[in-house]
Image (cartoon, rainbow, N blue to C red; front, side):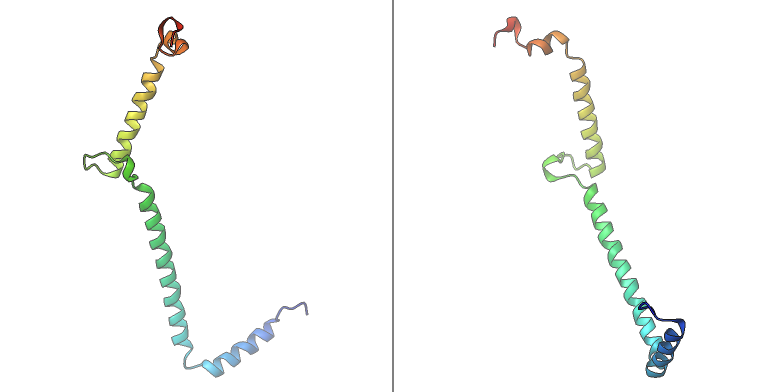
Amino acid sequence: MGGFLSPWHWLFILVIAVLLFGNRLPEIARSLGRSVNEFKRGLNEVKDQIDQGMNEVPPSNRIETGATPREQLDHQKVVEEQRSATADETPAEEIKTGGVEDGVR
């Protein structure tokens, strides 16, 4: 038979279950439904906590202005863009010598 139950076996098991637990089956089904809903709710709470944690800025990078995390991230992006723009404007001569004149350090 290959280890699988035929439809007749499942029907027989269902009849036995109804005979044994007939008056309690609705209660068992309700309890099972509540358990599944509680599990889903717990998963959603964990997902929300992870999402909230990813939106926060670490304390070492906070700006002391009372800005929201989104404003802090926007400020950091502006600062980084300014730094990269400043690096792009550095003259080639200064890059070659490292800012030291006449090659003396």
